[in-house]
Amino acid sequence: MKHRMFVAALSALLCIAAAAGAHEYKSGALLIVHPASRPSAGTTGAAYMTIENKGGEADRLLSAASPAAEKTELHSMTMDGSVMRMRPVDGIDLPAGGKAAMQPGGGFHVMLIGLKAPLKDGDRIPMTLTFAKSGKVEVEVIVQKPGGAPDPAHQH
Ligand SMILES: [Cu+2]
Image (cartoon, rainbow, N blue to C red; front, top):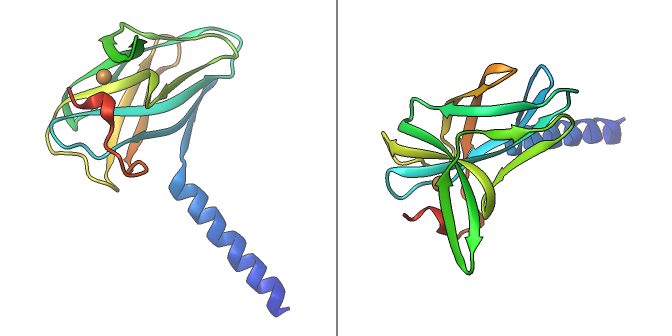
């Protein structure tokens, strides 16, 4: 009996840990996995997430907006030799049954420009994603410290 209670308590704890570590949003055919950012030293930051399109029709992320920043842009990041280059894109395609990875070190991200306050570990900032088909989806971006090193791609 004691043992079973212990197991139940332990699995409840694990659930809480999982919920704090990763969060996701479902809207229609879209699954938005773990919108996250990193603490920022200055007034720019970047948000990352994975967007899965589980539907049979293509969709497209058109824009992202957050009251935490004066301006937000969708950026792509590519390696040009050994130099990481970022440039604004006017949308991110979500093919039917496909996904778009917005992650540190490559692919896409949401650039936050003119942050009203530097992002701190543990902050949560609201963000509105606008899709061509699915319309607007509200998410919360969790600010988390990476494994120690600052985000090298965003010291521009
Ligand atoms: Cu950027």
